[in-house]
Image 1 (cartoon, rainbow, N blue to C red):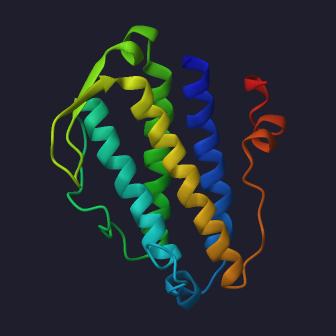
Image 2 (image 1 turned 180 degrees about the vertical axis):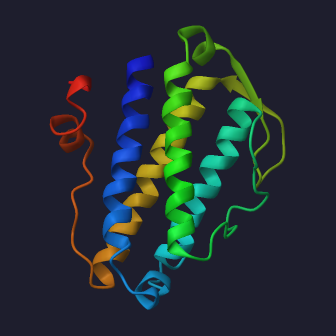
Image 3 (image 1 turned 90 degrees about the vertical axis):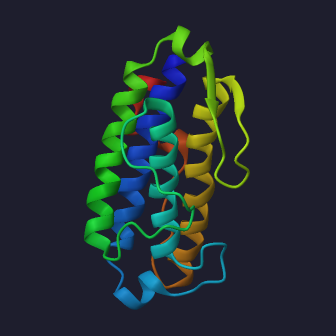
Length: 169
């Protein structure tokens, strides 16, 4: 299981680099354009992803800032958002590298923002959720990117594994 999480952390960083490289080529209007998706724009959705990762990492490690709203705008500008995303991705990779089988099997307790009840279960499904959540919203971002005139990009996990992530094959 540990290799699984390490692969997802590396994939997550690669997929974010791929996406942000193309989003960074857009003008500010396209970056902020409401496309009718759940969070509306690339700007808001990418902020949501960073927000959610910070919330989960605070729960996992007890370290760092954790916004109290899922729609928090952490960075108004693309460059600040991209710098923060890179730092968070490095943090996720380091965290995945630090995990042990005992850690991921151990009970994990947290309270969701949307329903503040105490929940306890093994860490494994929460880790899997965090990485799956990234994939879900990156897919939305891919659709928004093409809708505002950007290119269609390849974000498939298997493509990552065949190119930059060969150690995971």
